[in-house]
Length: 255
Image (tube, rainbow, N blue to C red; front, side):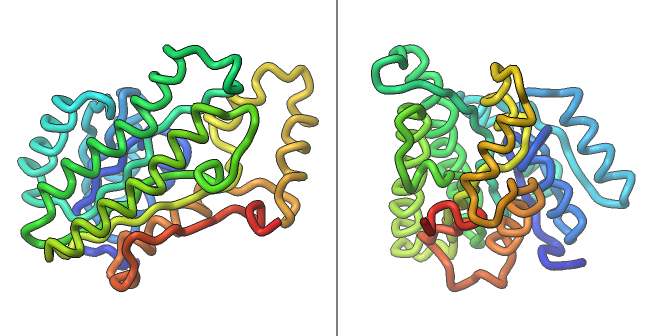
C-alpha cells in the first residue's frame, strides 16, 4: 500500500478510463495526485474519491496540446505539493480512418493530442524533475507497434510516442538527470475511448466479441490492468528501466 509513498504525480486524461484508474491506484499506493483533464466535473469527482479514501489530490484543467496549459498545470502542482516525481502522459483520442479517408484536419487533430501532448508533457516534466529525478510514463498502444489499415493517424501518433520516448529517455540518462522515461502499450481496453470506436455498430455485443477475438487470452483488458503496469514504472521497483516498452495486450502482438 506504499509503493509510491511520498511521491507527487500528475496524470493526464485522468477523468475517465485508464487515466482515472491510474490516478486512483497511485493515490492508494501513497502518491499525491494531480488529476489533469478538460472534463472538470468528472475530474473533480476523481479528486473527491481520492480524498474520501484519505489521499491528497488536486484537479488541474489541462488541454495537453497547449504549451501554456502545461505551464499553468505544472505551476499549480508545484505550488500545492512542492515537487513532481511522476508524470503519466495518458490523454489521447481515437480516430478511425485509412490513409485515403483521413482528412488533414483530422490527422492534425490526432497528432496534436496524442503526440504533441506527450511531447509537451514530457518536456514540462523533465524541467520539473531534473534536479531530483523522477519517472515519466507515456501511453502508446499496440498500435504504436503494429499497423492497422483503418487507423492511419492513430498508428502514426502512437508510433511517434514510442520512439520519442526512447529519445527523451536517452537524453535524460546521458544528461545525468535521473529521470526515467518509458512507454506503455495497451491492447484493447474496454474504456469510453474504445467504446467510441464501436459506437456506430448496431450490435454492440457483437462488436465487443470481435475485439475480444483479437486477443489470445479471449477477453478485453480492464483499466486496472494498465494502471498496475504504470504503477510499476512509477515506483522505484523499475529503477533500472528507461527507454523501454511495457506491452500489456493479452497476447495481441505475440501473434
